[in-house]
Image (cartoon, rainbow, N blue to C red):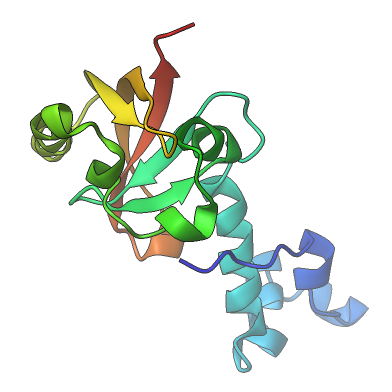
Length: 163
């Protein structure tokens, strides 16, 4: 998935003539000049993206999975835990990073996420690029955002159990 460019709210607001401020709501004033070119829609999607990736700078490993367990987003702490680059893991199955003996646990975790509308936790072992097996707890919560066309995905905290 391509990371969206971030823009400030001020850059999203079109100029509005003073006389029109009283006759239009803020929303319609925002929608008029730029909607025809799609710039405002793009800026709104960028703003939504900021809420999708709130954990980019978190010290705890996080990832977002789609309904079949593909990695939609992953933060630097999770990349460090796995010993891989972002480009190597994006839109690949997270099961590839789970120890072979625990793959069924991850698949059951994703199935449980799809079956329940609440929080799901599973303990399993990940396999890092260096071959190390890392005991972790996956703690997933379902979420959806308009920037992803309302698609359901699972925000997941990856707790390193070695610590």
